[in-house]
Amino acid sequence: MDEYRDAADARRFARAIARVTTRPWKIMEVCGGQTHAIVRFGIEDLLPDGVTLIHGPGCPVCVTPVEMIDKAIELAGRSEVILCSFGDMLRVPGSRTSLLEAKAAGGRVKVVYSPMKAVELARANPDREVVFFAVGFETTAPANAMAVFQAARDGLENFSMLASHVLVPPAMEAILAAPGNEVRGFLGAGHVCAVMGIDEYRPLARRYGVPIVVTGFEPLDLLHGIHLCVKQLEEGRADVENQYVRSVRPEGNLKAMELMREVFVVGPRTWRGIGSIPDSGLVLRETYRDFDAERRFGPTDSHTEETSECISGLVLQGRRKPFECPAFGARCTPDQPLGAPMVSSEGACAAYYRYRGDHLETSETSYGGDHGKE
Amino acid sequence: MCLAVPGQVLSVAGEAPYGLTGRVSFGGVVKEVSLAYVPDARPGEYVIVHVGFALSKVDETEANRVFEYIRAIGELDELTEDQP
Ligand code: SF4
Image (cartoon, each protein chain N blue to C red):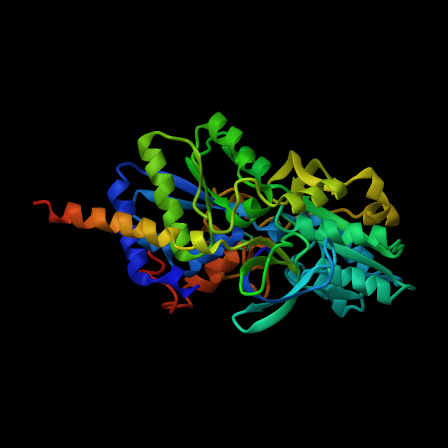
C-alpha cells in the first residue's frame, strides 16, 4: 500500500490541484477515517490557499448520543449483564462518567473487535445477559446485522443489542440544508459506499448542486478525490464520481445490504452535538425487537447533560476547527477527554492533537513542513 | 473503530453463506475474518475488512487507476511547463 503514499506523486497531485483552482472552494470529507489520514499526512499543507477541507461528522464514536452512553453505563452496572463494546467507546464521556470508569468500579465491560465475539460470549455464558453496544455507520451495520441474525437463528435468549446506528446521506443533507452552509463539494466515504453503492448520493448532488466524489483513504486517494472535486466545481458540474473504484462497486455489496434490510429499518436518530435528524439511523425491525436491549431492560430515567465547554457540535459540522476550541489541548486531551471527538482516532480533535499539536514539531509521515501555520 | 483496512486472503474455510471465513493477513498479522459478504474471495486476493467482516474485494485491475491518472496529469504538467 506504500505506493499510495509516495511523496513525489503527492506533490504532482498538489500541483495539478493548484493548476485547476481559480476560486476558493470549501470541500468536506465526510468520514473520520479520511479526517485522520488528512491530518496525519498533512494533506491540507499541500493544497493551494483557495481549497479548504472541512472535517465532517463521520466519526460514529463522536456522534453517539450521550443518553446512549449513559444507558450502556447503567447496563454495565447490572450484576447479570456483560456489556460488550468496541474499544473506542470506553473513554467517551457520558454525562457523569465513562464506560472505562464504570469498568473500574466493578462493571462487567468487555472490549470486542467484532460483534460476533459478543454472540460467542453469549453462547459461552448462558447464565449472563450479553449486551452489545452497537454503534457505527453503514460500514458497521452489516456486521451487527449478522450478529443479530445468527443469535435469532440459534435461539440465543441472552444476547441483545443497544443499537445507535447512523446513516451518512441524511447527515450530509442536514449539513447542506443548514443556514449559512459553506460546503460546496464532498469527498464521499469510500467504505460506506463499498457497502451501500453510490446511487443514493445522486439525488443529493442534484438537489443541492454539489459534486460528491467517493474517495478512498490513502493520501493519493484523497488528493485524487480533491482534484476530481475541484475540477467539477470549476467546470460547474455536480456529479457523483467514484475515485475509489478498486474497492467500491457502483451497486455496493448486495449481500451485505440484504442482511441489513432483513434486520434493520430506517428510523430517526439523535446525533451527539448536532441533534435529531429524520430517517438518519437504523433500528431493529419488529421481528427482531426481542434483541433490542432498550426493550429488554426497559428505559432508564437518567438525566443527561453535556459538558458546556465542549464545542463538538460545531466541530462535527465543520464550523470550527478543533484548535479553535478553548479547551483543546489544555483541559481536553486524549487522556482526559471532555468530548467524544478527542477520544477516537477518527475524531477530529484527537487527530489534530496527535498530529498537529504544538507538542509535535514534525511528523515523519507528513508531507507538509509548516505545521501549525494556522 | 470505523477504520476498514485491506488485507490479503491466505485461505478460505467454512460453509457459505454465513459460515464462510478466511484467514487474512494484514501486513503479517493474521486474523480470521468472515467472508459471508464476499463469498467469491479467493486466496491471494485482497479484501477490505471492517470489524471482522470482509466488505469488498480490492480489484487488482483497478488498483492502478490513481497512478494512471497521475501520469495523465503529469504529462499535462510537462506540456504546460514547456510553454513559454
Ligand atoms: S477539544 Fe475537547 S472540548 Fe473541545 S470540541 Fe474537541 S472534544 Fe470538545
